[in-house]
Length: 396
Image (tube, one colour):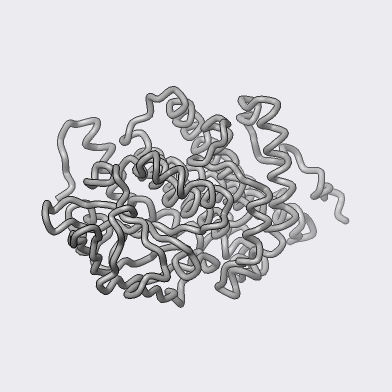
């Protein structure tokens, strides 16, 4: 060991929490966070690269996830929004694909049921959803509709007596290759409004096909969905989902969750880059002792901490019932932009080793691109915030 080397298992600020944001949590929350971190360290992170290379989600882990009973920004279980957000960041830090699985099931899918289903529907469906006995997916994005899906939903719903007939296609639907249910948003032909339906994936006319050849979130099983005269009882029409404005109630909360994912992604990049820089020697000493390497490590940490500070405040506003759509939009736009800078710096620190998944950074770098795009693109979220500060819409 060179004279400038230090113990990589005993680095300063081991968790990267440079401004002690976790001190804002209660003792109970910090204890629960430690439990979740230990589980992720044991059950997820050591296997994440293997899952990513295989391009398949470890479905056998779902019962153990249920035993952990994780907290999420939607399924908070009485905890604060801040704790739920930091927890979601930790899942991302361990593996982005794993966090996205939970973001779809616990966020978009469960959030749709919690926000838009009737009390009777919630009582019937939520127990199995919370227990992960029923896995869910969220069907909004379409092959020809992404940012414009609010006014351009092509999937249709036609009332037929006590049922609805759904026709159309959805794309990029996470979990849909193995989920039990999908919440499908479709345009009612009678009034041209977007409505939500809980669709059993075994229903005749429903098919899902895994999307292959991805360079990001390879462990997530995104699918193309086709609905060909899929008949859904009116009992499975979400009674509070009758316009796209209703759908936005769900997206506001899940957009906040993606901001936390951007924090977790940056902390993952910091973990890997710092450890590598301390261990890797060039010119007879660790590269962590070089000025330009330290500058890049500080950039990653600074980006992560500025992103975390914004998310902490947004979570506090959410707890107080004061958070606004434009605040979630700005947070998603800002944190994911910083994330892109951070993972690029991390990949640069690893040099050639940064482009092979063996060292984790290639996976972290690639997965960041998905976070950057989903839950509203950089451009759309920027324009949502821009409309809020100017009073003028600039979407087209």
